[in-house]
Length: 267
Image (cartoon, rainbow, N blue to C red; front, side):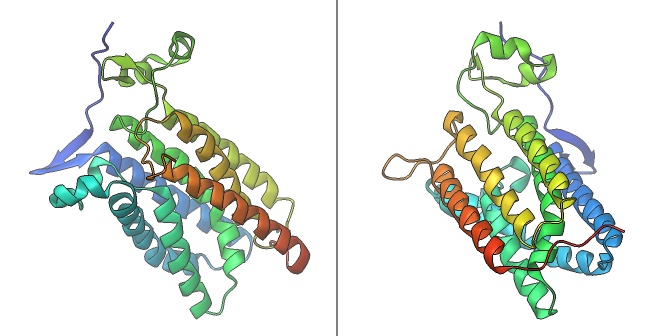
Protein backbone atom coordinates (compact mmCIF):
# COMPACT_ATOMS: atom_id res chain seq x y z
CA UNK A 1 0.00 0.00 0.00
CA UNK A 2 1.32 3.43 -0.91
CA UNK A 3 2.44 5.59 2.01
CA UNK A 4 0.96 9.06 2.34
CA UNK A 5 2.57 10.81 5.34
CA UNK A 6 5.65 12.25 3.62
CA UNK A 7 7.71 14.83 5.47
CA UNK A 8 7.62 18.37 4.11
CA UNK A 9 11.22 19.30 3.18
CA UNK A 10 10.53 22.93 4.15
CA UNK A 11 10.94 23.51 7.88
CA UNK A 12 9.54 27.05 8.00
CA UNK A 13 9.42 30.36 6.15
CA UNK A 14 11.15 33.63 6.91
CA UNK A 15 9.05 35.98 4.85
CA UNK A 16 9.52 34.87 1.24
CA UNK A 17 12.49 32.66 2.18
CA UNK A 18 11.82 28.94 2.57
CA UNK A 19 14.14 27.32 5.11
CA UNK A 20 14.64 23.65 4.27
CA UNK A 21 15.14 20.88 6.80
CA UNK A 22 18.25 19.83 4.88
CA UNK A 23 19.94 23.13 5.67
CA UNK A 24 18.73 23.09 9.28
CA UNK A 25 20.11 19.59 9.84
CA UNK A 26 23.46 20.26 8.15
CA UNK A 27 23.88 23.53 10.06
CA UNK A 28 22.99 21.82 13.32
CA UNK A 29 25.45 19.00 12.63
CA UNK A 30 28.27 21.46 11.94
CA UNK A 31 27.46 23.50 15.03
CA UNK A 32 27.35 20.44 17.28
CA UNK A 33 30.62 19.15 15.86
CA UNK A 34 32.41 22.45 16.48
CA UNK A 35 31.00 22.68 20.01
CA UNK A 36 32.13 19.15 20.91
CA UNK A 37 35.59 19.70 19.41
CA UNK A 38 35.95 22.99 21.28
CA UNK A 39 35.09 21.25 24.56
CA UNK A 40 37.69 18.58 23.90
CA UNK A 41 40.25 21.21 23.00
CA UNK A 42 39.70 22.89 26.35
CA UNK A 43 39.96 19.55 28.18
CA UNK A 44 43.28 18.83 26.51
CA UNK A 45 44.81 22.24 27.06
CA UNK A 46 44.45 23.20 23.39
CA UNK A 47 43.11 26.59 22.35
CA UNK A 48 39.34 26.51 21.58
CA UNK A 49 39.62 29.93 19.92
CA UNK A 50 42.15 28.51 17.48
CA UNK A 51 39.63 25.80 16.63
CA UNK A 52 36.95 28.42 15.93
CA UNK A 53 39.35 30.29 13.66
CA UNK A 54 40.22 27.04 11.90
CA UNK A 55 36.53 26.19 11.43
CA UNK A 56 35.86 29.66 10.02
CA UNK A 57 38.07 28.75 7.07
CA UNK A 58 37.65 24.99 6.82
CA UNK A 59 33.85 24.73 7.07
CA UNK A 60 33.05 27.05 4.12
CA UNK A 61 35.78 25.34 2.12
CA UNK A 62 34.25 21.95 2.92
CA UNK A 63 30.78 23.07 1.82
CA UNK A 64 32.10 24.52 -1.43
CA UNK A 65 34.25 21.44 -2.03
CA UNK A 66 31.29 19.14 -1.35
CA UNK A 67 29.14 20.99 -3.87
CA UNK A 68 31.82 21.25 -6.55
CA UNK A 69 32.57 17.54 -6.21
CA UNK A 70 28.87 16.72 -6.56
CA UNK A 71 28.45 19.00 -9.56
CA UNK A 72 31.61 18.39 -11.56
CA UNK A 73 32.54 14.83 -10.57
CA UNK A 74 29.26 13.07 -9.85
CA UNK A 75 26.50 14.86 -11.76
CA UNK A 76 28.08 17.06 -14.41
CA UNK A 77 25.89 15.77 -17.29
CA UNK A 78 22.83 16.99 -15.36
CA UNK A 79 24.21 20.31 -14.13
CA UNK A 80 25.67 21.12 -17.52
CA UNK A 81 22.11 21.51 -18.76
CA UNK A 82 20.77 22.95 -15.47
CA UNK A 83 23.46 25.46 -14.42
CA UNK A 84 20.95 27.54 -12.47
CA UNK A 85 20.62 24.70 -9.94
CA UNK A 86 24.31 24.58 -9.04
CA UNK A 87 23.95 26.95 -6.05
CA UNK A 88 20.79 25.17 -4.77
CA UNK A 89 22.46 23.18 -2.00
CA UNK A 90 19.22 23.22 0.02
CA UNK A 91 17.93 20.60 -2.41
CA UNK A 92 20.71 18.25 -1.34
CA UNK A 93 23.80 17.28 -3.25
CA UNK A 94 26.78 17.74 -0.93
CA UNK A 95 29.35 15.00 -1.49
CA UNK A 96 31.24 14.10 1.68
CA UNK A 97 34.38 13.10 -0.24
CA UNK A 98 34.61 16.59 -1.66
CA UNK A 99 33.96 18.11 1.76
CA UNK A 100 36.71 16.11 3.47
CA UNK A 101 39.27 16.76 0.74
CA UNK A 102 38.62 20.50 0.57
CA UNK A 103 38.27 20.95 4.33
CA UNK A 104 41.44 18.96 5.04
CA UNK A 105 43.44 20.91 2.46
CA UNK A 106 42.37 24.32 3.75
CA UNK A 107 42.73 23.12 7.34
CA UNK A 108 46.26 21.90 6.66
CA UNK A 109 47.28 25.22 5.12
CA UNK A 110 45.74 27.17 8.03
CA UNK A 111 47.33 25.00 10.73
CA UNK A 112 50.77 24.98 9.13
CA UNK A 113 50.72 28.75 8.61
CA UNK A 114 50.23 29.05 12.36
CA UNK A 115 53.06 26.57 13.01
CA UNK A 116 50.76 24.11 14.75
CA UNK A 117 50.56 20.32 14.45
CA UNK A 118 48.14 19.28 11.72
CA UNK A 119 47.82 15.74 13.03
CA UNK A 120 47.03 16.89 16.55
CA UNK A 121 44.19 19.10 15.38
CA UNK A 122 42.98 16.56 12.83
CA UNK A 123 42.76 13.93 15.56
CA UNK A 124 40.78 16.33 17.73
CA UNK A 125 38.28 17.09 14.96
CA UNK A 126 37.83 13.56 13.55
CA UNK A 127 35.12 12.37 15.99
CA UNK A 128 33.15 15.57 15.37
CA UNK A 129 33.40 15.01 11.62
CA UNK A 130 31.97 11.51 11.68
CA UNK A 131 29.25 12.53 14.16
CA UNK A 132 28.31 15.42 11.89
CA UNK A 133 28.08 13.01 8.96
CA UNK A 134 25.84 10.69 10.97
CA UNK A 135 23.47 13.57 11.68
CA UNK A 136 23.73 15.07 8.21
CA UNK A 137 22.47 11.89 6.57
CA UNK A 138 19.05 12.65 8.03
CA UNK A 139 18.91 15.61 5.68
CA UNK A 140 19.04 13.06 2.86
CA UNK A 141 16.16 11.26 4.56
CA UNK A 142 14.01 14.39 4.53
CA UNK A 143 14.81 15.01 0.85
CA UNK A 144 14.16 11.36 -0.09
CA UNK A 145 17.65 10.94 -1.50
CA UNK A 146 20.57 8.59 -0.86
CA UNK A 147 18.18 5.63 -0.81
CA UNK A 148 18.71 2.11 -2.05
CA UNK A 149 17.15 -0.62 -4.10
CA UNK A 150 13.76 -2.15 -3.30
CA UNK A 151 13.93 -3.54 0.23
CA UNK A 152 12.65 -6.99 1.24
CA UNK A 153 9.62 -7.20 3.50
CA UNK A 154 11.62 -8.19 6.60
CA UNK A 155 13.68 -5.00 6.36
CA UNK A 156 10.57 -2.87 5.99
CA UNK A 157 8.95 -4.48 9.03
CA UNK A 158 11.96 -3.55 11.17
CA UNK A 159 11.74 0.14 10.31
CA UNK A 160 9.84 2.69 12.41
CA UNK A 161 6.72 3.92 10.67
CA UNK A 162 8.00 7.43 9.90
CA UNK A 163 11.09 6.02 8.16
CA UNK A 164 9.12 3.35 6.31
CA UNK A 165 6.66 5.90 4.95
CA UNK A 166 9.41 8.25 3.79
CA UNK A 167 11.08 5.36 1.99
CA UNK A 168 8.08 4.78 -0.29
CA UNK A 169 9.70 6.02 -3.49
CA UNK A 170 8.79 5.36 -7.12
CA UNK A 171 6.15 2.81 -6.19
CA UNK A 172 8.15 0.67 -3.76
CA UNK A 173 9.74 0.66 -0.31
CA UNK A 174 13.47 1.30 -0.60
CA UNK A 175 16.48 0.40 1.51
CA UNK A 176 17.10 3.35 3.87
CA UNK A 177 20.78 3.54 3.00
CA UNK A 178 20.94 6.95 4.66
CA UNK A 179 20.07 5.14 7.92
CA UNK A 180 22.62 2.38 7.38
CA UNK A 181 25.36 4.96 6.88
CA UNK A 182 24.18 7.07 9.80
CA UNK A 183 24.31 4.06 12.15
CA UNK A 184 27.72 3.04 10.78
CA UNK A 185 29.03 6.56 11.37
CA UNK A 186 27.73 6.54 14.94
CA UNK A 187 29.59 3.28 15.55
CA UNK A 188 32.78 4.81 14.12
CA UNK A 189 32.26 7.87 16.33
CA UNK A 190 32.07 5.66 19.44
CA UNK A 191 35.21 3.81 18.37
CA UNK A 192 37.13 7.05 17.81
CA UNK A 193 36.16 8.34 21.25
CA UNK A 194 37.37 5.08 22.76
CA UNK A 195 40.56 5.20 20.71
CA UNK A 196 41.28 8.78 21.78
CA UNK A 197 41.28 7.65 25.41
CA UNK A 198 43.96 5.11 24.51
CA UNK A 199 46.30 8.00 23.57
CA UNK A 200 47.49 6.69 20.19
CA UNK A 201 50.23 8.31 18.14
CA UNK A 202 49.25 11.54 16.48
CA UNK A 203 47.45 10.95 13.18
CA UNK A 204 46.05 7.53 14.08
CA UNK A 205 42.61 8.83 15.05
CA UNK A 206 42.14 10.88 11.90
CA UNK A 207 43.34 8.14 9.57
CA UNK A 208 41.17 5.59 11.40
CA UNK A 209 38.23 7.89 10.70
CA UNK A 210 39.17 8.06 7.01
CA UNK A 211 39.57 4.30 6.72
CA UNK A 212 36.52 3.16 8.66
CA UNK A 213 34.15 5.67 7.09
CA UNK A 214 35.37 4.51 3.69
CA UNK A 215 34.74 0.86 4.57
CA UNK A 216 31.12 1.63 5.38
CA UNK A 217 30.66 3.77 2.29
CA UNK A 218 32.23 1.09 0.10
CA UNK A 219 29.75 -1.52 1.31
CA UNK A 220 26.61 0.62 1.48
CA UNK A 221 27.17 2.27 -1.88
CA UNK A 222 26.60 -1.07 -3.55
CA UNK A 223 22.83 -0.94 -2.93
CA UNK A 224 22.27 2.78 -3.56
CA UNK A 225 20.33 3.65 -6.67
CA UNK A 226 21.67 7.18 -7.11
CA UNK A 227 25.33 6.21 -7.52
CA UNK A 228 27.38 7.75 -10.28
CA UNK A 229 29.22 5.28 -12.49
CA UNK A 230 32.46 5.62 -14.41
CA UNK A 231 32.72 4.82 -18.11
CA UNK A 232 33.84 1.33 -17.08
CA UNK A 233 30.68 0.72 -15.05
CA UNK A 234 32.30 1.15 -11.64
CA UNK A 235 30.77 3.31 -8.92
CA UNK A 236 32.76 6.49 -8.39
CA UNK A 237 32.18 6.60 -4.63
CA UNK A 238 33.33 2.99 -4.24
CA UNK A 239 36.51 3.66 -6.19
CA UNK A 240 37.28 6.70 -4.06
CA UNK A 241 36.43 4.79 -0.87
CA UNK A 242 38.67 1.88 -1.82
CA UNK A 243 41.52 4.28 -2.56
CA UNK A 244 41.04 6.03 0.79
CA UNK A 245 41.07 2.69 2.63
CA UNK A 246 44.47 1.95 1.11
CA UNK A 247 45.71 5.46 1.93
CA UNK A 248 44.52 5.10 5.53
CA UNK A 249 46.19 1.71 5.97
CA UNK A 250 49.49 2.95 4.56
CA UNK A 251 49.32 6.11 6.66
CA UNK A 252 48.62 4.19 9.88
CA UNK A 253 51.55 1.87 9.19
CA UNK A 254 53.82 4.86 8.51
CA UNK A 255 52.67 6.69 11.65
CA UNK A 256 53.26 3.64 13.82
CA UNK A 257 56.81 3.42 12.54
CA UNK A 258 57.85 7.07 12.34
CA UNK A 259 55.68 9.22 14.65
CA UNK A 260 56.58 9.32 18.32
CA UNK A 261 54.17 12.01 19.59
CA UNK A 262 51.00 10.69 21.11
CA UNK A 263 47.60 12.30 21.38
CA UNK A 264 47.35 14.52 24.45
CA UNK A 265 46.62 13.15 27.89
CA UNK A 266 43.35 14.01 29.58
CA UNK A 267 43.60 16.14 32.73
